[in-house]
Length: 88
Image (cartoon, rainbow, N blue to C red):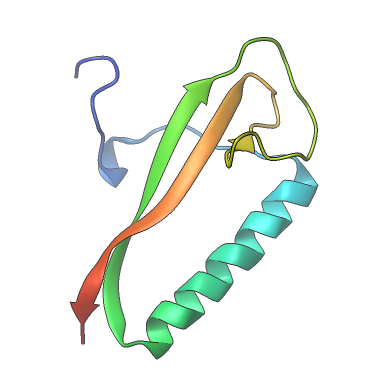
């Protein structure tokens, strides 16, 4: 695999760790989104995860330009639900 190449879920072997306050906030958002998609009859969707390296180290609970800072402070995660137009 080339560095930076897209991976599918079976290729992804990393742990994504957020600070506890952001972890719970993200779970709440994802649960709400999944409930909405279920109510709309959407049966399939994907979670797109982008990872960027951060300069310096941040260990706080503030989103960075829409991204979720890693607990380690050296990465930032960007998430989005995609491929959600399939109805059941």
